Length: 118
Image (cartoon, rainbow, N blue to C red; front, side, top):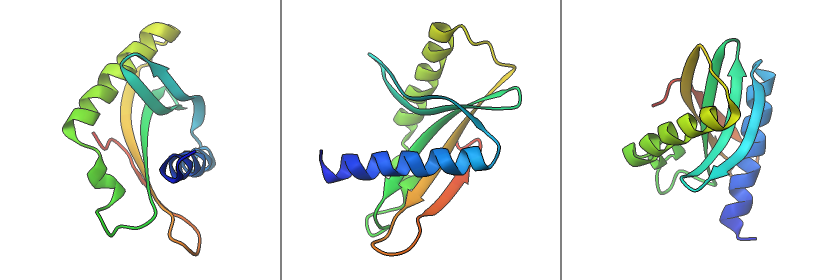
């Protein structure tokens, strides 16, 4: 496994723990189809939360927030629509969140949950 893949998996675990501690319920992780992948699908009350997780070991080359392009946001919307059709889920509301995780060489990870990021 590449170091970047391991860092990404670590960030997704950190994000899932952070979100469940905040009261969200994980419905799906790493859901894939031919269009791509959704990192986390969660529920907060009646709201379906589709979450992109971006993890970095430093901000030397930009923040995790900067890694989410308009193209990535549009793909995530298409993936969410496909996930809902595939699972038969009809939520009252859908929200797209970003969890940015920065794990420096030492110390606890810094987690930033941006609700309605895109």
